[in-house]
Every structure is written in structure tokens, then in C-alpha cells.
Image (cartoon, rainbow, N blue to C red; front, side, top):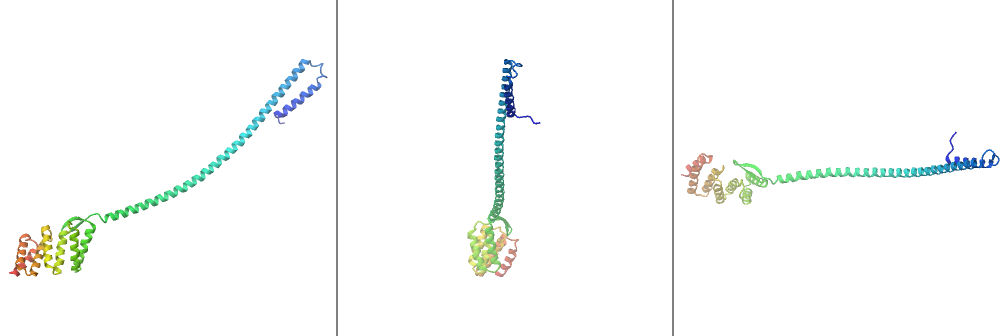
Length: 263
């Protein structure tokens, strides 16, 4: 059998108290008046205690219900916050992945740009070249212009080659190609029968680079121009100077042969 709660117990006690009061006259012989009053007071105290206990229990139950309601609300709020955080994290994760993709694409573009810049810079960086036994540094454009002019000469386009070598000599006066450019300019002029200008350029080449590999050929070419101009005395002196300056050269053998024909 389940025990009665505080309110029910209080009501039962009050009922018992009422019944006891109803039977007091009949049992006056048994109980003295003082004892009856004490019994009634004790019952009232017990009833009051039971009522107070019941009230406290009701208050505690109400507070427990309120706490439970507040706890459920807090749990709901917490769940809502968790869902909101999850949504925000998913959004941030997506944004982070997008930023990573954009960063990777930016790095790739920067790498491509850097490579392109390096390639363009290399087009302007000096390169090591060797021409007629001389090794020196030359700009890529300088190398390109010299080789283009020489290609014109080898194709037999002497007028174009003369223009190209003359332009090269003006544009690159301090170039390592300068002696060779002067030499080929003189040969292009010789081919175009411009002997006086050819002599001028051959002499300029000898004056600036007397030890150049093509210097003996330049001296021989001066003599050939003089022969074409019927300057026999000048040609003979040029050939004799060649023999003294470059006795071991291949041009010296040709100079001896030409001297023998000029006598």
C-alpha cells in the first residue's frame, strides 16, 4: 500500500482530531481536562507540521517543475546554438576551400608570370659568343643583328649586307663584333665595286684591331681594292707591309703572288 502524501495525511489528521473532540464529553471520566487539551495541542502541532511539510513539498515540486522547464528551454537554446555553429562552420569550411583554390590559382599565375618575366629578361641578358677567335659578351639583339647581316652577305645580297653592316657599326660602335663587322662591311663594298669606301673600312678595322684574326685578310683586301683602282704603287706598298706584319699568315702567300705579278 502506497504511503499518503503530506496534504492527504494532514486532512486525515484533522479528521481524527475532529472525531476526538466529538467524543470528549463521553469520555470525560477517562481523561482529565488538562490531558485532553495537551492531546489536542499535540494533534494541532502535528497537523501544522504536516501542513508545513506539505507546503514545502509543493513549493519544492513547483520549483523542480520550473527548473525542469528552464532546463528544457536552455537545452533547446543550446541545441539551436549548436545547429547555428554547425551551419556557420560548414559555411566557413566552404569559404576556406574556395580561398585555398583561389590561392592555388594565384600561385600558379604568379609562377607563370615569373617564368614569363625570366624568359623576357633572358632575351636582354648578355650572352657569351665567339667570333673570329674572339670570345666576348654580347646583347641578344646585338648578336641577332650581326648574324642577320652576315646571312645577307652569304646569300650574295651584297647591297643589303652593306646597309646592314653599316647600320650595325653605327649602332654598336663598342661591340666585340665591331672589327668583324668592319671587315664584312668592306667585303660587301668591294663586291659592290665601292673600292674607296671598302679601303676606308678595312683600314679602320686594322687600326682598331691590328691583331685580329682577319687583319691579314683585311690588308690583302686593301691591296686588291687598290689594284682595282689602278693604284699599283699603293697596292705594292700595302702588300709589302702585309708581308712584314703578318709573314706567317695565309694572306702573306697570296701577297707574294700578287707582288710577283705587279713587277
